[in-house]
Length: 229
Image (cartoon, rainbow, N blue to C red; front, side, top):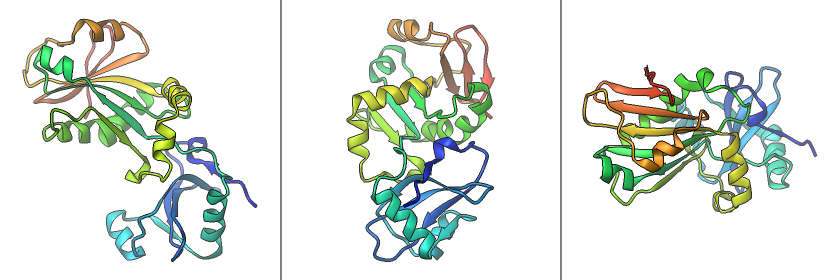
């Protein structure tokens, strides 16, 4: 049986997103088809929509059917694909919000399998993750503490098994891009963080993302800001 590779082995800017459509299969598979035609797997999901509905939600997506899709599903079922990991983990710091008056304070870890520098992925992260989280924060209940994002928004069947595996998640966090996400309703030049976060942000590996009514901004540990637009 063919062993398929995970999308973590494919450059972010290469490939076309696909999903399988095999009626009565136990699950469907999503991923990207490389320019070479090779299929890279990102995950699996059980919710099955008709192809026309999928295309309405995700215009331009490739729907794979027939023997190619069946072989892919069989390979995933047999474990012949590398482990799928979260796209991001958002860990809210409610204690910091209460202390500093921020709308939102959180730690954000973004999957970075290729080890790219934050500068090369910054705009993509802003558009696909940070800005939606800022909008979500306006409606977020006080007791919402953690949010885990999965590729294409599809939670895999073994999601709990993955996130409950401390060794696996620690290794994932070490390769990820780590950020502090602060949303402040006040439009001034002050960055409000508590003493614990100040010690964390002293690390050069941590980048701070700050937002006010003018939009999100990024500030490394040295005073410098950059718009998330």
